[in-house]
Image (tube, rainbow, N blue to C red; front, side, top):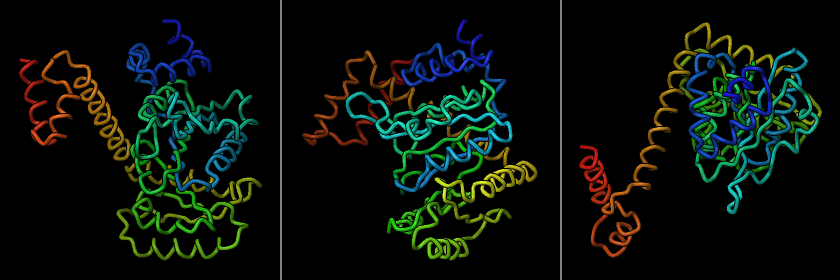
Length: 315
């Protein structure tokens, strides 16, 4: 297959084409991933998450530049809110990373979330697989920035960076909602703004209240990404965290959990697709929804009925 050959030859156009095919549920792309799956698992996947306006894209670009200085190749998947009309990414983080776009060692892709909750696109797993096969050393997955529900990044990343910024007013409220649980490294970006030291102190206090499941001490760093201030220290902490999870065996357990989550997502999508595209007239979801609306049945009984009909059809 030509696309497979070009991917192995490190052709960026093949990466772009395959990710587009993934987003359109083209089985040919999944077949290529299956054939080359033995090449996956070697990249360090770093999640960049946090509330909107925290400067995630600028921080990601700064990190990519530092890694390029070290001769590391970098893939960036920036998940943006989707257009309700086209399903495409609205913001287009590549606009903020223009100076990286021509670097042969960097690949940047904006992906629309397409209504998928949790801050990532349903195609993100497959896109990271393609970049792993391509041979990237580091893959950054920058999430939408939806705040409290943005926890799915832990199902993909080896290292998760939670980016906060002083002055938004709801940073700690977001942390209290549970997103703090997923951070391996905390970054207070735009640290030249008033309230940066106060925010660092508040995060420290909240971390001290947590019962740690391992010996990793989550660092809290101050950065000014637009000036590259603090980026060297952050890169060093990323290296240290990856070394820690490798030497303690946590990397394997993280990878296994990510694979389980990926399997669950694929199964969920396949099942939903099977239900919606069923040729069985008795599985008319619009009719079932109408029956629920008219109180002739309820959602739980309706789902039991759908399962029963699908089971009968498969026998």
